[in-house]
Image (cartoon, rainbow, N blue to C red):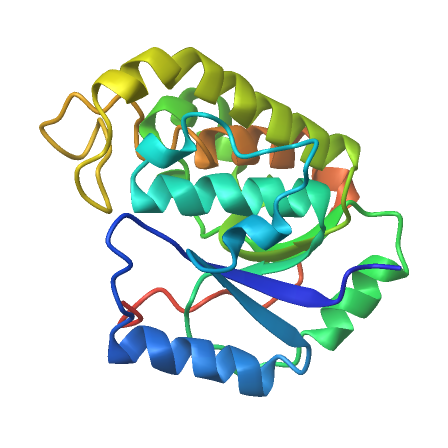
Length: 222
């Protein structure tokens, strides 16, 4: 039985409170999704972490954005169910849970935005012309322990292993820090831990993904 829950993440170094836009987006998920919504934060995070699969040693050194990237990968692999950015939601998620549950697909989500800019610059030579085979990272539902989520999770862990010495030496100093968007020695690029792992898997397994969920809100949500 598919885990009929939506996970959202609000974790970070300084436990910063959500602003009104974020609070409104979260409230709309609680009201309109018609399924259980769980906000995972600094207080309850460890209750979801499996004893045999602890958080990576480098997790504490990540920027807040990369922590959220890590956690959605961890949760979709180990727990399955839904994930959503904290953004406005105006639709019932149950039909999409039903569609995935009644199929042989690995996951269901929204199609990626049109054009080459939907992928990171490093991905464009391979995936720039294939954006139509991809899903957005903003929201989706996955079955746990599939070939997709296993490759997604283990590739992320391999990146964390590789970056660990530099992460210890140069931990993130702000919530949105990334090697390609800040003048910094922090070693992980903006899309390196998630987009550059997730999108190639979408391309590889495009026939095992359902791309019918509503496209997420992308303006005035922060």
